[in-house]
Image (cartoon, rainbow, N blue to C red; front, side):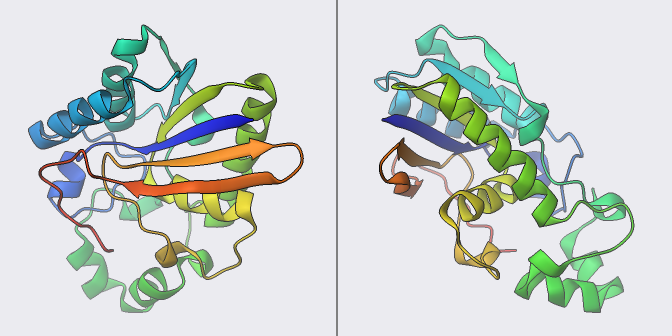
Amino acid sequence: MVRIILIRHGESEGNKEGLFRGRRDFPLTQNGIEQAEALQKELKDFDISAIYSSPLKRAYDTAKIVALPHQLDVVIDENFNNICLGEWEGKPKEYIKEHYPDLWKIWITEPEKLRFPDIETLDMVMERSVNRLRELVQRHSGGTFAIVTHRAVLKPLIAGILGITPPYFWKIHMDTASYSVLEYDKVRGYTLSLLNQTKHIKKLIKEYF
């Protein structure tokens, strides 16, 4: 059995301001730091042997806080970097809604079909994250490891590893500083045993788009 703890980073400035984030490197807010510290306490008794993180600060700083009780160095892994959203990055969602109404409609209904120049598709995110997860599962046979990343990575990762067909993106909800648990064994494959655990978070602001 292998246990994989999937963590969404704490609240960042981009979340708070309602911006499309992508690979724009927003820091954690004070609330985001407190969320990560609450997550640290929640996960301190898990026997975590390795922590992998997106290179973006909001994920990496969350991972470092979670890693402290386990005395682990966080491993940056580009395969868990956030989706690239091209010219949308850093722009308010209301701006995109007003100036790109057709693309906005796709985003809020079937983002799996979203296409425009310089964007990374969700299929691309799914391929790189799922392939890397499978490699790490082989590396950590019999153990527990954690991945700290972004909702636009976690959702296609979960869908890809469990075989959930599109449109899946808005059917899976992941809050900031939440954690989910995947388990793997050679007989049954992957099982999602916990999704979007947030009981440790005092100040939770839901983000639906």
